[in-house]
Amino acid sequence: MKKKQGMQNTGSRKTSSIEKRSTEAKEGKEEFREPGFWETVKEALFGVRRPLDCIQVEVTSRCPGRCIYCPHTTLRDRWRSRDMEISTFSRLWPLMRRSARVHLQGWGEPLLNPAFFDMAGLARRAGCQVSTTTCGLCMDETIALRIIDSGIDIVAFSLAGAKAENNRSRLGVDFDRVCEAVSTLQAVRQKHMAVHLEIHFAYLMLASNMEAVRGLPALMKRLGVHASIISTLDYIAGPGLEAEAVGPMEPEKIERAEAILSETSAEAVRMGLGFHYELPDSSADGTSCRENIGRTLFVSADGSISPCVYVNVPAEVADPRRRVFGNVLERDPLAIWESDEYRQFRESLASGRPDRACQSCPKRFM
Image (cartoon, rainbow, N blue to C red):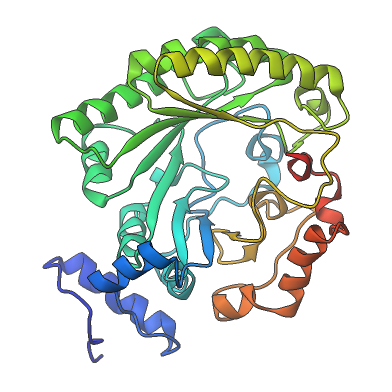
């Protein structure tokens, strides 16, 4: 196959193979061309050609964890464990060329996919910033060095407590092992002076375990974590888990959570740490979404495109919330994003007439 003009030779046999498959996957719809220096400068100055903020890509739906609040656990008998193929990821090229960031994570542990770093590299060549969220169980010095070399700028580690005793909802993910993983990445980052990389915590605050978040700033300081993003339970994966959520119509929970988080945030700021959270607000008009579906999208491991991860759970169940607008293996991803059906879905939320899948979602009130 004739080599596309503008494609740079990195000297890597693996990279050349990826680029060839990526070009073939595009079927001539768009030239597989990396953005040049002046094109990148123009984008930075004028914000052109990047109408999407982020593409979230489910690298895999496989996960070693058994977190009590996750559908991977509650629907384990009907779960579809699968890895995204690099040829499927390559078809996202037109979207990546129009997105500021690619986040490599969905309903699984992304580092389990053998093609993870190939995908990160392809996204970087498209001019995107690249981030991921991991449970940490796969982390070692070799993986840490590959992360640094890949150009990934944010790695977030999942937690649901700041000590071993209050992180027990994450069954199968040992708290001390997560801390060891963070320390490993931090040590390699410092050794190689990888100032481009930030280490974050993706922290889930369960209603029954709110006080545990107070220990987070001290843990961040000890491990060298730059920032924490605090969320509450949004997807109810099984009976009884409603009690662990903080809903927009639960003022007592919201008030308690706000008091704890505001005090903890002030402590983190005093330590020079990033600390970000949002809680539902019953007075919000419900016409926006924390998932920012007007400028982001989710691609599952099988190539299907949805507004967010919550409406495309990989399980063999009848789910009335499931919304898929096309598959990149069958249609051009830009055509899917720009389709009338998908546009109407996004506009319905903004106009105050959300699709049924969004009507009960607390993210509308954040």
